[in-house]
Image (cartoon, rainbow, N blue to C red; front, side, top):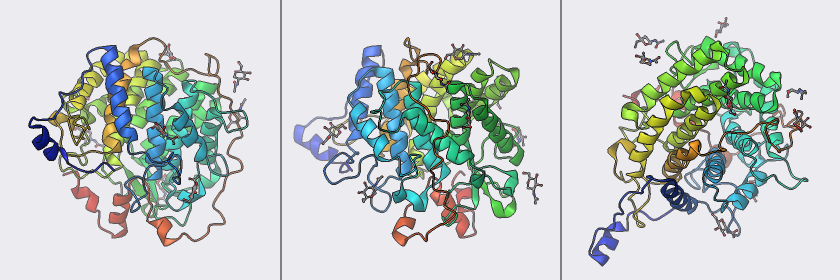
Amino acid sequence: MLSPLPRLAAVALVGVDVANAAYSIATVADIKKTSADIAFDMMQYYKGNLTGQTPGILPGPPPAGDYYWWEAGAMWGALIDYWRFTGDASYNDVITQALLWQVGPGQDYMPLNVTASLGNDDQGFWGMTAMTAAENNFPNPPADQPQWLGLAQAVFNTQANPDRHDKTCNGGLRWQIPPLNNGYNYKNSIANGCFFNLGARLARYTGNKTYADWAETTWDWMRGVGLMDDNYSIHDGAHVETNCTDINNAQFSYNSGVFVLGAAHMYNYTDGSPVWKDRLDKLLNATLVRFFPDNIAFEPACEDQMSCTTDMLSFKGYVHRWLSITTQIAPYTAPVILPVLKTSAEAAVQTCTGEQNGRMCGFSWKKKKYDGSHGVGQQMNVLGAVSSLLIEQPGKAPVTNSTGGTSKGNPNAGSQSDSFTHDKPVTTADKAGAGIVTFLLAASTLGTFVWMGIGK
Ligand SMILES: *[C@@H]1O[C@H](CO)[C@@H](O)[C@H](O)[C@H]1NC(C)=O
Ligand SMILES: *[C@@H]1O[C@H](CO)[C@@H](O)[C@H](O)[C@H]1NC(C)=O
Ligand SMILES: *[C@@H]1O[C@H](CO)[C@@H](O)[C@H](O)[C@H]1NC(C)=O
Ligand SMILES: *[C@@H]1O[C@H](CO)[C@@H](O)[C@H](O)[C@H]1NC(C)=O
Ligand SMILES: *[C@@H]1O[C@H](CO)[C@@H](O)[C@H](O)[C@H]1NC(C)=O
Ligand SMILES: *[C@@H]1O[C@H](CO)[C@@H](O)[C@H](O)[C@H]1NC(C)=O
Ligand SMILES: *[C@@H]1O[C@H](CO)[C@@H](O)[C@H](O)[C@H]1NC(C)=O
Ligand SMILES: *[C@@H]1O[C@H](CO)[C@@H](O)[C@H](O)[C@H]1NC(C)=O
């Protein structure tokens, strides 16, 4: 971690306010320079390539450090997009080392170290990052190593396994994968959203209908169980004990974003079918209305109270990137989406005047000034918002296997996977780790939906 707030001392020392003017995003060159600085500052938090550290992960999981395993997987995706948008390959070797180190024994992003808090969403974020690598022809690993497309397929295949789709709540994925984990009794939108997103993208990339069928099934399940309601609001999750009738109404931007990008891919895969256009239109509208008030990204469940967890502090950046890519996959959405993302990014960079270097980014963009909060999520958010402004530059559309994609696939990847049917007891230390909605879980374990107060 960067040490907090030595800035006052610095001011006293030089006798002037060290606060930078906010970054410029006025030109393509400005956007590249700004993105480079923000990425550099983000990477100061990463220690995994230093001697004695574990490649691929951020300091954590709590209490060892702030970050759960999934967030590093998400960060490598942000950096692949950074490379694809700006052309700066500075981090490519670090990214590759990280993505290959964490594949786990089944080469499916279920490394043993994280078993005790391994959710379908955690695995899904690493899988989506591998998919991003394939879709952008990120340099392929050596031939004797797992390949990006194969890794994405492995994650998908393990999640499509019948073991993970029991009959409670009429189907759907649970949050946690191992049955003994806290949270195995919760079926949530982000776990199913990652699976949907990956299925839709694999369908477009490979042309294989099996993936599209699963995406359809997952969408129908979300609608049927009510996690995506008639207004296209997406609710966090529900418990199997109630057949998923105790819906937790907390709404997070990444849930909507992950489904928007998937729906755009289904729209594209179906050659612009009216059904998927209608779904995409309505979901996109609901997303912009709820999460971009005044056209600035906002996390309604926690931002005003500054009660966002470390996880939640990273959602805005994914949503920016996913919406920007949506404009390539469903080009008719560009006039609706791009002006919003631009206004939002302009607010975002105005928060980047914090901490000792005078340019760390804050979280609450609508304040248009640094709000005292900094970390990987805050940097990754603004990095995503700024770098993805380059989406309109030529050649930024994701490729497919038939339009130049070079990553090698394996339709049967993930079949060596651990099904966890022989579950071993988890250790207390392991249990300290948890997944994305840990605080929701703690609350429901206590039998009181404390989280309901959080959005008020
Ligand atoms: C670790 O990665 C950073 C990029 O974030 C790079 O500058 C540095 O050289 C790497 N260190 C080692 C030991 O590989
Ligand atoms: C698992 O943890 C050990 C001990 O910290 C570490 O050496 C190893 O690299 C980790 N494995 C992965 C895949 O992160
Ligand atoms: C559980 O809910 C689903 C709808 O999500 C419904 O089809 C099913 O009948 C319900 N099962 C029970 C046992 O109530
Ligand atoms: C949808 O929105 C309308 C108007 O705001 C509201 O009356 C209705 O209750 C909402 N439906 C659901 C399922 O939330
Ligand atoms: C599908 O995506 C491609 C970009 O990869 C785009 O050119 C095409 O117009 C999209 N199809 C539809 C129906 O929008
Ligand atoms: C978008 O949603 C808002 C609020 O739910 C609604 O008033 C508006 O008509 C919708 N616009 C479109 C284009 O669907
Ligand atoms: C991908 O494209 C290559 C070369 O065009 C072809 O050999 C391969 O069969 C394709 N794979 C799939 C899954 O369609
Ligand atoms: C399509 O994907 C499914 C699911 O992974 C796989 O079983 C099947 O072999 C694939 N078909 C082709 C033609 O690759």
